[in-house]
Length: 312
Image (tube, rainbow, N blue to C red):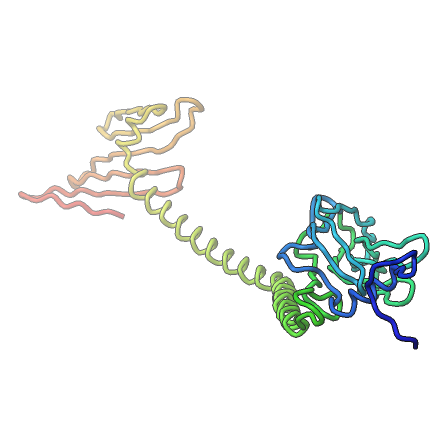
């Protein structure tokens, strides 16, 4: 190859330089990648299926890219109904006659059970730097930031222009970060899947425990109610004074007494009490309840200076 040098002032057109010669010159000391500025050319989720590529600068094979005005907004294609896919956002150097530009574009992925992002085109027609991969889940109607994997720090996909001639190799750091991210998310997915599978048996066991506790409590409560009823609701005189009830007293010719407590609203008999004066001088008092059905008998024997009461 003949000797060649640049750049010199032209005299009568004897030093004319092509774009290819300028590109070759810059490519000799500026590596490919994005100029680092934190969010330079960062891909962010917006609303719905929209994402944006932030402002920034880049360099591809000696060609310069700049967007310093406003982030570039683009809409991803609709999600597949049953399969996920991975789209890739790239900075593309188009070397075709009709192209001759660097633009940020989205390369749609192919829906699959285990989808992979589209490859990067790097040939004489075009050269691409990967900015981010975006997972589009099946049936999704929006993209969240956690679905976006930033590729800018990976020298394999993109890289960072931080100095002349060589750019820093951050691929190891990127791979370490990505591996840890995958490890954590896989761990959570595994835990969640196991927890979801175990939930029916756990719930069944807890339901059985709750049923046993409820049954035991109901039995205890019913017994307490019965005890309270027996202790407080079988006082004949108490019921005779309650609203809605009335007591009727009948005196027989022999001196015996018959009493009844009835419900005023329906005339049903709640309880009866009979008092009999026995020939031996004792007194028998018998109380019969309809609800609950029980009878209590008290015999009072009156002796010399003593009164004895017997219950049955």
